[in-house]
Image (cartoon, rainbow, N blue to C red; front, side, top):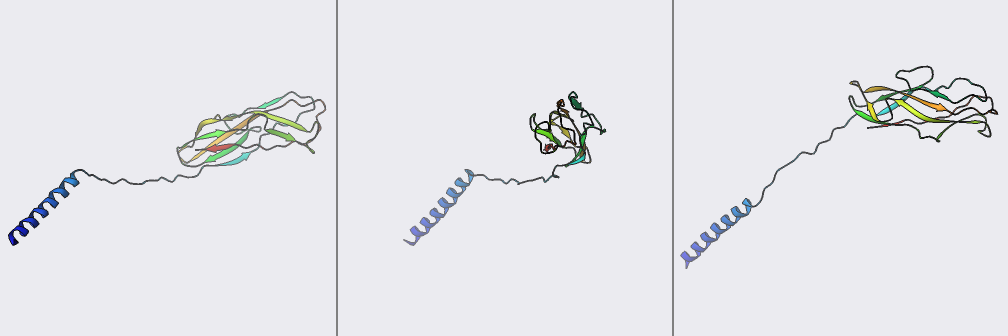
Length: 163
């Protein structure tokens, strides 16, 4: 009986080993890394305002071109962020920017539309090797009414940049 128990234990151990080896042949595993690159945040800083100059009531519409460099009329900005990285520029939509004087009542407003930029709006910005690019913006001021109130008109607009 002792011999039978010994053989039974040996057989059980062998079967356990063979079954374990068989199960291992049916499984596999590996590892992977989790990675993250942190880049410089994008920012935009105003350098100069857009200036439509001086005009008289009844004057025709006036367009300030964005140009390819800062001038006396265009608005200019510095975009900063991760070197050699592309970004998207968004300009104001038509009908969203108005310059006002006084309380902004009758004949105290002037619409500003048709915004344009250099580089052009959309996915056209590209930061240089130092992580910087100049951005120039122009637009069209509506014609001044014959009864346009005399005064200094101001209005703000937003330029968005995003990676």
